[in-house]
Image 1 (spheres, rainbow, N blue to C red):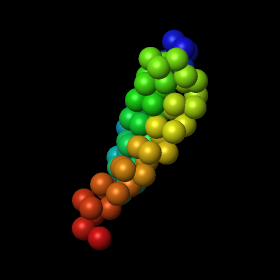
Image 2 (cartoon, one colour; image 1 turned 90 degrees about the horizontal axis):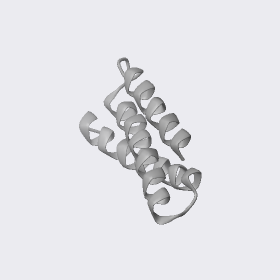
Image 3 (cartoon, helix red, strand yellow; image 1 turned 90 degrees about the vertical axis):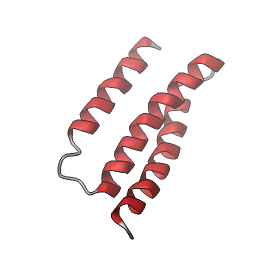
Image 4 (cartoon, rainbow, N blue to C red; image 1 turned 30 degrees about the vertical axis):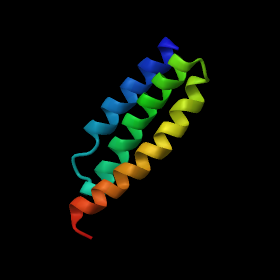
Length: 76
């Protein structure tokens, strides 16, 4: 599980670093997916589930919420 957590943290940092030329909607999607994946993996690890499944579900939910939030920030 330590490797999964480290990989997710590295992915989140790289994703945030790559957000400089993105629209608010794209930034929200990427950031939401990264945060959701980290949260999902953490919750799955605590509850005894699969970290990869938790990360996948968290990434989808976080990406969707981030996309909606970014869309609102763009004013569409």
